[in-house]
Amino acid sequence: MRKKKLENLYESFTKKKAAFILFLICALTGLFFISLSLGSARLSLEEVYKAFFRGLLPVSPLSPNMDSMAYTIIWFLRLPRVLMAIVAGAALAVAGAVLQVILRNPLASPYTLGVASSAAFGAALSIILGAGIAGFRHLVFINLPAIVINAFCFSMLSAFIIFWLSRIKGATAGTMVLAGIAMMYLFSAATSLLQYFGTEEQVTAVVFWMFGDLGKADWSNLAIVTLTIVLVFPVVLRWCWDYNALSLGDETAKSLGVNVEFLRLTSMILSALLTAVAVSFLGTIGFIGLLAPHITRMIIGGDHRFLLPTTCLIGSILLLGADTASRTILSPLVLPVGVLTSFLGVPLFIYLLLRGRREYW
Image (cartoon, rainbow, N blue to C red):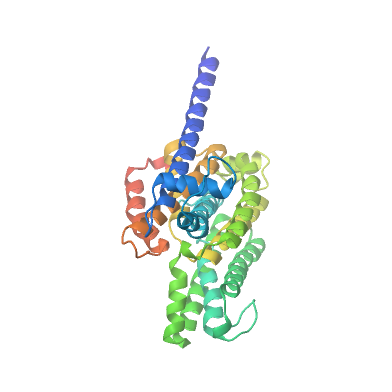
């Protein structure tokens, strides 16, 4: 009788979690269309709907002929930006959730491994010296792809240095956190040194790159970020039971047959890859990877079968909501979304800290 009651209770909790995920999907869909309608040129939801389906189904009766201006705004300006907010928010949120469990640190985020600071160094190297992984060229001929390649390569360089140090000292959570902090300070200092020798225009360009801006999104880099999250997410979702075991401690996980060192190092590389791809295209966008996993844990708990997909959705909603606000608060002026996520993230994180139950932290 007691066993049957527990089974019914578990089934009820599972249905509630599934219902919450369905609610988030509906909320994200609604926010998607609202975000497409807002900006310096306001469009009605009907215009957005017609322009959106005109692009998807050009000969459908659902998409009759309409003003080409609305079509151009939606498909060439806003849609890549909005979709990038969704996939980048999901990537940063999943990276944060994975890092928090493998490092067993509630303050872990995608930038704990020094990925953001090393990406900034790679971008600064390209902007100020015209040099780096992408090759040597004069500042006049530097384009975004060269900066992106530099930023990505140096991001992954930081991750592989941490991987190498962890292999030598043992892949413990403490080793990886300390190595990540060391990389963060090293590349931050190197970026500051480059800025010291740069001209005023070059330093300004570096600072604006580091702000974090979804205005850099286009269809080509959207495809790369989307492909990365599509390939990585099924892998980490497959390890959800291993993450559940690891959250109980290394010894418990090992007793349950989990290869803790392999899981920790591989998850670290995958998290760094998700972060590096997003950061190299968009610049630094803070707090998404820190807040989304905590919000998820407080609502549905720490079971990674539900936590990972829910964190994906909440990360997308947070970043898309912040980007929508950045385009409307001082319209027609567009604020850098990285600045806005930091301003909104700090009070929200303090609120979660004060309201959160002890077991979440």
